[in-house]
Each structure stands twice: as structure tokens, then as C-alpha cells.
Amino acid sequence: MPSIADTEVTDFAISENRIILTFDGDYGTLIFKFGYRPPRVVYFRLTNITPDEPAHILINLLKEAYQFEAMHTVFENDKIRQRRIL
Image (cartoon, rainbow, N blue to C red; front, side, top):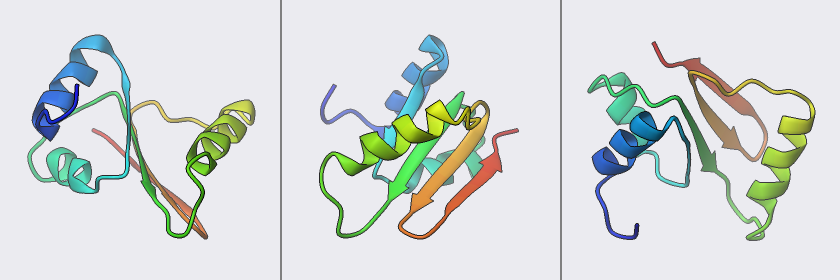
């Protein structure tokens, strides 16, 4: 669904119990400032990466049973941060 608003993506994720995978930092604002509650958000804040790197990162973490439920997860080149979506 290209060109739809971040709020529409969030509403869709909530209604369909989907994960939001994004390179857009605005979802943190929607969650922590405006109270949106998507089930999970993974924000890739990476620099100088190949197009397939985010998928490899996510696959490896899922294999390790990393938890994403009710979390806003930020992947940076040198760290992973998580904050609970309340």
C-alpha cells in the first residue's frame, strides 16, 4: 500500500495483528507521543548497509527467540534498543 499515511499503516497493523518493519522513525512518535499501540514495530536505523542486511538481522534474531511482542525495537549499526509499547 504505497503512499498511505503512517497512521493508516499503524491502524492496519493493529487490526491485523501485524509487525511494522520500517526505516521511518515517525512510528516512535505515534506510539510514545500519540498513544498508538501496534503489536510490534521494528525500526531499522542503519547506515551503509546492503538491501538484504535487515532481513538477515531479523531472521537471525528470530532464530535466537528474540522477543518483539509489544515492543518498539530499534536496530542501529552497533546496538539494539527496545522499549515496551504499553
